[in-house]
Length: 288
Image 1 (cartoon, rainbow, N blue to C red):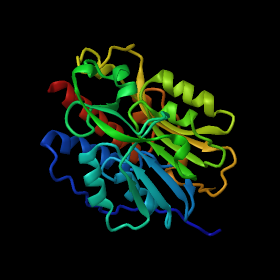
Image 2: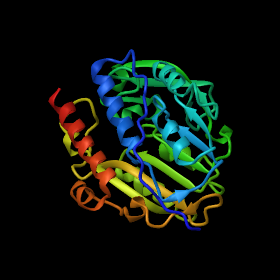
Image 3: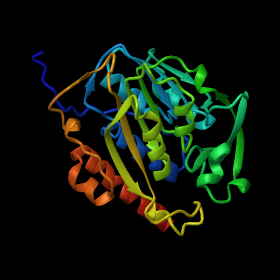
Image 4: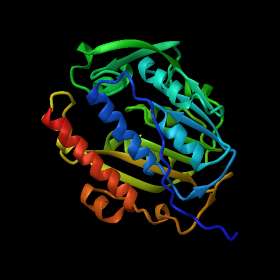
């Protein structure tokens, strides 16, 4: 097609007002990872339908609108304080629609959101909170609206950053017409199950793994195996309907990274930077 892929750096301003210094640092670091290509994959398209589950302050929605021009993005965020920032950061973008709700397969109008650290730092929905957070029963909990996955609008692309709910949501969805899934998974067992339940339709395009080891011994989190991991997984439909693969981009060269050391040596430059920031973030948390 005569098309050439360029890598562009575009400044994006996010309103993080009202956040504590620690929370602002955490949110800014996560947003920088998103803007740096944490969820990217070498597929082009425009005028797509995109679901942003766990929208936080809007970084992914803003990035996705630049990445896939003309697309309609529906962003779901349950935490009321974070949702207020999401509204402010996306208010000038009419094709970004915001929904104040969690997404989880349950027939209820609301569910508990366990918060420990303010906003959605160290937060999880009540049905899964005890799987990750120690002392979740004693943490702050608020009621938030919830939407069942079956009631979500159709999508070409789905992004999930839902703190342990990713597998339950995917199992409850009809993914036949979805071309691209990008998600943060929270343990190795869930990652393997996600790959298993999607294997008939999807293949792994890219993965980045981070070790849980720096958290072990921290009484904020449930104990787990030394070899456990969390990370980012990008899945592409074997027959994507409204996306076309773009050859030659840096993300086309990305490979699955089963461990942090391999990630640092084999992932492309932007993802390498994101891994370095995540390591520094883990060290800061461990020092507190």
